Amino acid sequence: MRSRGWNRRAKFYFALTIALIVAAWTYTWFTREVPLHHELLIPFAFVTLGMAIKYGDQVFDLNIGSKRKAVLLSIPVGALMGALIFLDEGSATIFIGLLLALLLVAKYDNLAFKLGFLTAGAMAVLAVLEGRPFHLLGTIIVMVAAIADEVLSDRGDRMREGALSLLLKERLVLKGAVLVLCAVGFLPTFLYFFAFLGFDTGYSFVEQISLSGGIGHRKA
Image (cartoon, rainbow, N blue to C red; front, side):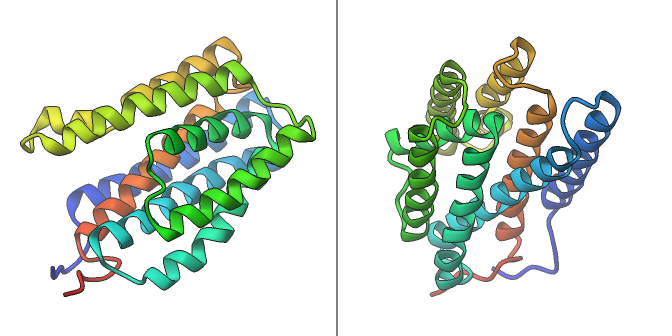
């Protein structure tokens, strides 16, 4: 699988990811809804998690790149997610729901994912035991939406390539759920909607550069 560079969709998702980070920072700058460290950290951390998670997924699913690097990366990535859960209510609401959803649909199917889940999951359990804040109903809504998106995405993977299959793989249920949670106040600010879109576009960006040969070629 040879490539001279990123494909068009990779370039699109990269540009969209940068635009979403800027949009998140711009929104919080004008609204002053969150402290400066939230304004700077949350969008960047969400994008980083989306990209790192998809890297591990592609390395094992497509047998490209370095599995050793993916495994070594999984623990700090899990620790980053766990730290967000431990320290930030909005992040906890989203990521606890995602961790539970992926556990229920059995998506922790390689060593990197298992190590990342154990790290983030242990920190999430500690956060709950210590009474760290998160919105329980919001977490349940995220979990249900994520499960629905996994089902639809798997169906899209089995379909002939086309507009409908691409739409099903865009995970629109979860995006819509996060938007609604922001609107009704289960998430404290729309910063989390922008950040979650960045998480998703970062995820899609890595998927596309992997298909272009950008993280290594398929091993025989």
